[in-house]
Image (cartoon, helix red, strand yellow):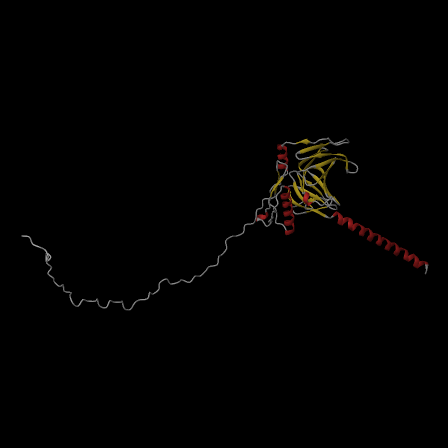
Length: 346
């Protein structure tokens, strides 16, 4: 083989190496993209300005029935409100000016609250053994199972309030992001404040009043707004969210959601009761079905009620009354006034 042929083969080998390298990189990247695009939930209520940022896109408006994917960031603006069903076991509600990220590893679903206020309701019966749902704030970590928790982040201070169940709150390591130190148990109608900086958490939480519990309940009540008709798949998801809330308040019967509504209106209302129970009322405006239908007309044959009574051609007659031919005679007998043996006294 000549030197010319060898020299000509060098560029070809280099090109093939580059192509193989690109294919290998593309093959490796496919699972990562697929993992990032994994669906973890669905938006069941959206009100006001709410955006969602996927792993590979810019922020776009979040709409009712939109999918929530792994590592998505949801941001609510002024007067924004969003509610999402995650994995059929948790409902996350975000108030205005909130930023949250949904992440998940085997056995642990994490709602990372950067700022704002959220409530998280988890049904213990829907959790598999060993599963846990975490709420992470910049300086606190709360692992929850079968509880209703409200988390707030204001000015670097985290406030964790429990409306139902029991939660262990840890300090969050700012470097690793994991829970460190000793946990502080927080029970029903109790709250703990975690400030920025090192140091242990408060040993005991603070109790909250019934009025404060009622205020939190009202804050996380979903507004009612008209929504567009949805597909059967989304109907099933909304039904699951409604049934999940029903399970949280002890309602055993499932609620059937009819999203074929008049004017495309689906009213969904969730309320946390003042006794630390999440009470959810789902008002459904069902489509009006026309109940006026043409009933089949029965044609009845008119029966003649006049009939000819049988007539007797000849009225029965009494032929002849029997007559007495001979008039009976009365024989006259002379009866003596006195008997024959009577003596007449003179």
